[in-house]
Length: 341
Ligand code: SAH
Ligand code: SF4
Image (cartoon, rainbow, N blue to C red; front, side, top):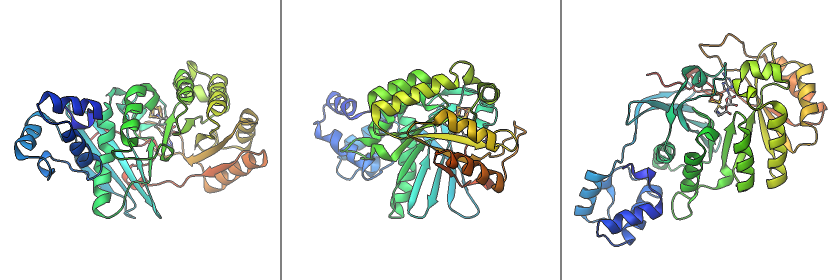
């Protein structure tokens, strides 16, 4: 049993079933999520026999770091983890100024097959459990803690489609959000989805404080479909209707992500078409020059073209930021995560 797969109630139940007082659960919970212990032998307030039983019967590893890459500017770190069944995932830490943003995975591989995404190119392996999602955060939280620092933001933008693994993703967020545990504020999470409409609506109904980003990348169905196969199932109108529903339900601003591909979706016309689509919606556009991947021939936009795209959108009243590319030298940019050693 993987320790991070347990919620507090199950941990309490386990302690009771072991004949332990229920306050042990609280001690373990605090050890895990406030002191970032990674081994049962570390818990100073737990009696030795119980520590030994924990070591024998509970899995504290779950995800094992097998390769760490630091970018040449030392600001971005990518860690490859081996899962217990031999699959691999990656998670990235980005340091900018005071921010410590973690980009974590929700699946090994991805079933959505977006053509420009390395994770999509490798196909779907399996969903991650809630504990495997939580463990990526705890791994980096532990490292930052040793530097007297801490995670400031968590983006679910690593490998996989979080809304395809909805339950485990939300369970992981709830566990990290727990006030008696890691206590990571809901507003500091961002979930990115390729546009799974029923889940966007469900997420809206749950009225969570978590930020939502939608990968749009094109303003017309033909173009979007050629890049994002999921568009055959949920077209742009359906996605945007669900986005309007989300904004109405939550009052929260939505982010649209746009990978700028030279000559494909980075033209002023494309920006104008997008502006027409987004008119009246509480949103902004996050554009990012395409990151190179092995299986896709398209090229990144240029600085000038990106700037013109942004200006065209802003003239039409849609706020747009161009995100910096990070960690490209270690293939840690958006869409570059794959699980090959
Ligand atoms: N599955 C989710 C989240 C993971 S991908 C989603 O698709 O939204 C995170 C972001 O990176 C998405 O916006 C995705 O479209 C984008 N992306 C994928 N491949 C990319 C690439 N090669 N260059 C830039 N962005 C890319
Ligand atoms: Fe999956 Fe997102 Fe990559 Fe598309 S962009 S293949 S949804 S991880």
